[in-house]
Figure (cartoon, rainbow, N blue to C red):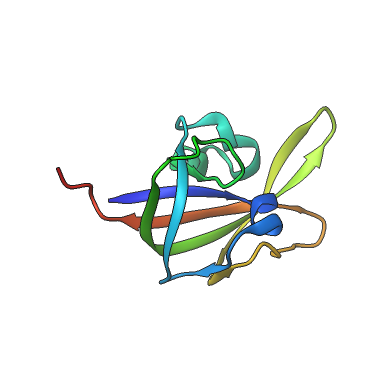
Length: 123
């Protein structure tokens, strides 16, 4: 099963573990509504694909399960901040690894869109 996971730049920069395409990871994920949540940062087409967000700062219950999967693709998302608290999508760049330091001149680094293959739960 394929999840598309948002990994916030600030969470990676604070205390995230670097990862790369092909790595097996264990993340606590929170479900996200499809669509508009990230439209301003990644554009509506990419935003519609995002199914979960990686979380390790309290937005999920303390006993939330850890989801294990294999990273298949990583895209660094950069946007431009404009007046009235708005973002405008800037650049989406495929990267091999993620450590929270993906800077692009003139744009703000917002996070990663990660394709994660997760084993289907068994009953």
